[in-house]
Amino acid sequence: MWIDDVVWKDALRITGARAVIVTAIETRTRLQMATVRDLPDGDSVTALAAGLAETAAELVRLTDSGSTMDDLVVTGPTWFHVLRTVRSQDAGGCVAHLMLDRRTANLAMARREFRHLLDPAARGPARERASATAKPAAGALPRRTPAAPGPAAVAAPHASPMWFTSLVGEPFEADRRTLRRVRDGLHRLA
Image 1 (cartoon, rainbow, N blue to C red):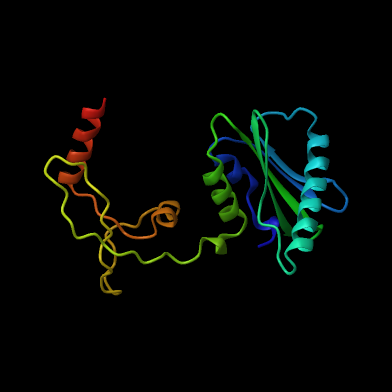
Image 2: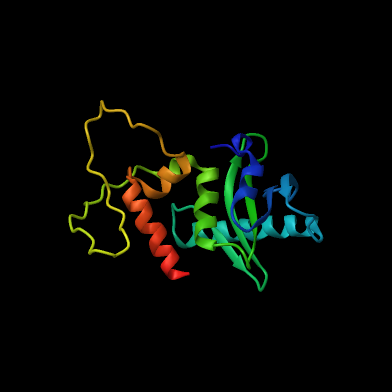
């Protein structure tokens, strides 16, 4: 996927995201930027991120011949920085830099969502999982039981959102009884 096809404001919807910057690696110039608030010394951050990503990508090429860099993660006391190399039709090699507020971000989920934003093919096919046959004990909280794959011609009554399907990977069912048990279990926890 080309970076020109990505809507960069979508990256700001990632939990904890404060800025996303796309920089040309060779020229160290900022191509695109979306922020929640102004960055302190944004031009220096841009140039340093591009240089760091270029160095890391070269290190990966030297140590793992034929491989490309996945993500470069830099952590600080208040920020997570996720750097990922991408292609641009005009600028060639670029680095996409996602800045996350460490207090609110989930680094693993942010990396996953950022990767899926930049490369939708990274989602891959949903894995088939064995369904559990054991029934929960009375009063126990319900467990998610994957539905058995049905005939392909039967249409689902309603489609799950794409982001939810990519996380779960399988259809699920929630009836009134299950929802009441979940609600009652949550009330007991409070």
